[in-house]
Amino acid sequence: MNATWEPTAPGVLELPSGRLVRGRGLRRPLPPGPQPDFAIHLRGRQPAPVEWESRWLRWPDFWLPSDRAAFADSLRELLERAENERVEIACGGGVGRTGTALACLAVLDGLPGHEAVGYVREKYSARAVETPWQRRFVSRFG
Image 1 (tube, rainbow, N blue to C red):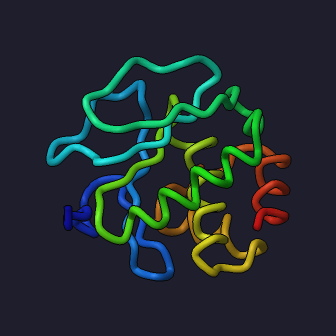
Image 2 (image 1 turned 180 degrees about the horizontal axis):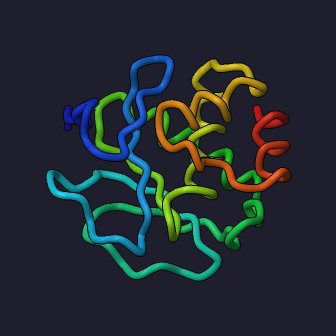
């Protein structure tokens, strides 16, 4: 497979390396256009099944991932797959947990932890990364 998102598609974040990742809220309708090839779903409870490959990571709303090692491993896989596949990160609203995960992904992609939240807020959503402990988690991620 050799398909990624269009850089101008809704919710798509371009990482420092140029890789593209879509962030979205699972409570909203699926955006028009192609489906993802792989997704990480960040929810307190298991989400509804989807037609594409996905991984559920337990992450209660406004908190941090329950299994931080599994979270880091999943982000590394997603970053690698973003080279040639359409990948997405999604939570309920597409802002707090998704924004935190996107900021952590930017750190894995080479951005310093202290810059990642600002980067995601500028390029994805001004409301991304909702809590002080999520911001601290990003600054220490890596």
